[in-house]
Amino acid sequence: MTIQLTQDTQVIPALLAAPIQTGPIYSCFVCGGAADDLRHWLRCGSHLDEWAEHIGYLSLPKACVLARHPQRVARLGKAITPLEFDSNPATPFSERILANIAAIRAAVEYLAECIPPDERQHDPASRIIYRLLAGRLPPQAAIAEIRALVADH
Image (cartoon, rainbow, N blue to C red; front, side, top):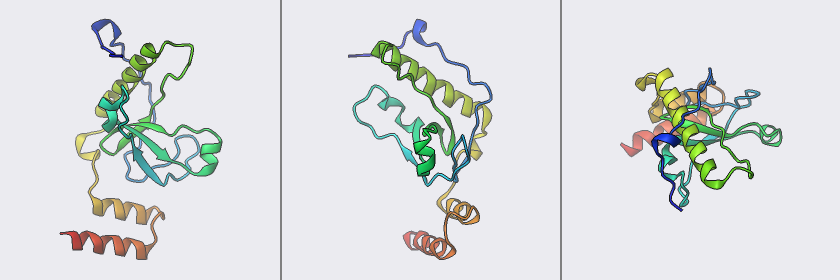
């Protein structure tokens, strides 16, 4: 099945003051629980693969997962915002795909409008320092990671 976006189907949903996190430290958008990581969309032959670099999933604490807190996010660099997909089985598949693409597009545009380009990226050393300062990386592990960075260069 080929999904084509036309002028008629390119309706972009509005995002009204959706929360944004700029990482590299992320947390649950509902309760603030510390996320372990941000996993990227794995290309799998889906109609959404074209948008893979803009889809991610927070690795949330078990309590957040059990409470069904949203894990899916739209990404632009290291900036993220919650991303909801239409998963209603009553909606025809092709319409769900179009709605999901529109949701991704709108979220990425929202991130681009809200976050300056220089605030969307973090180098490896900064990520280590941020994790250390947030208490998510023990000092000895931070030292080991920094030494590994130096050894790689």
